[in-house]
Length: 471
Image (cartoon, rainbow, N blue to C red; front, side, top):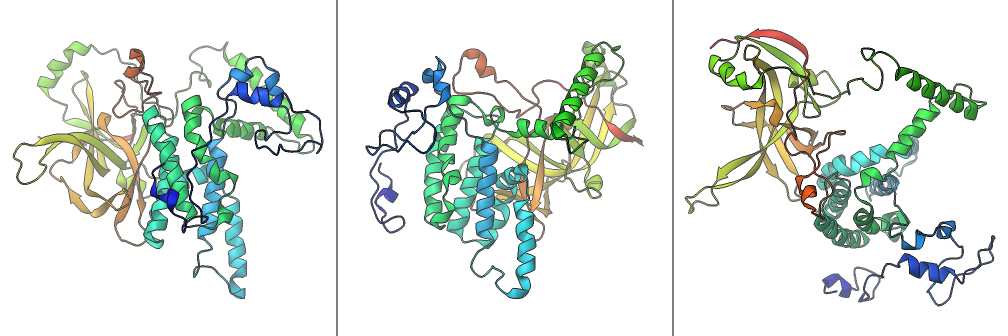
């Protein structure tokens, strides 16, 4: 109520705003209001003039005995909200004054550009809002515009995390209201349709329904794509889908009775699985450690561990994807200032790229995988984004690190500064870690992402060659 923008008439609609947020209606209250609604079809019902009731129809869900006690009666799909907001923002930014193609010879180019933008997928908008959009806008837009858009992108990135606490949800709910007010001071009113308003409610939906990964439409859309792939006769799509579904169910049923050595979809190793069954005698590791590693080691150009697929920098040059970026958080002693002589330990993030990979074999007792990396000096800009320069290396005397300690990241090149790349952290898609706090009945955490390997994993290497190591 004490926010200075409430009294800022010039930047908004010319009026002061001293009202409190509208109170959320409980199911029982909505049920009582709907008792007076005549549930007749057609345009016969009119909205109430007293402003109490905004409904003209009786929802059939209220026939369920528990529906009026259900707090989570509506689910907002984050996938389509991201897509529509991303499309609106990108379409608005392409029409910036001075950047618009307004001459007759360029109309065909503008038409082709609009076709490319309108045909993008929902996951494209998800990726642009989370990672890519914030990099170019801070270089081409004024700071007050870039800050508002970066905050909006950060909101969607944080609201879609697998790890989220109730304290963070409360902060996001307050932050998105201020972010939308910032956008109202910048963009035209035509941008603010119902889709731009819906992020106000996303934080509350997380409180009621949990993380968005279990409630958005990506699994449904993926399964719809699978059903559409069954269509062979376009004149009879329903019949084709039915036949394909039944054939798939029959094959799945028969595969359950095959011998366990036959590879099926039920026993096939996942794409990025790095687990390995080992019958080694663990207590003998000390003996192998004293003996030292074998002089013949394995060298890899690719490796799977911690749910990530890693490649060397040389191998990434021939590919369109990035898999050589690594990040590591370690406790590092540092001094607060020159006056203080007592170092303070704090977590520091290091970023680099993999140059080489080795596996040391301690004569069958155990194996250790090492990544040889190039580390870069990291800094943050005014928007809180971390970036590195590939030509500014550091810690060259300590290039090796254990493969089990790393996480993956990728780098987005700055379009205006050479060798400047922004750091984007990634999360394993199918790797989850349940928090230990859940066992102590802690109500503030739903899940926790892996900051370190949740359990000991044995990697599954591929594409290796033998290298001789000399002492």
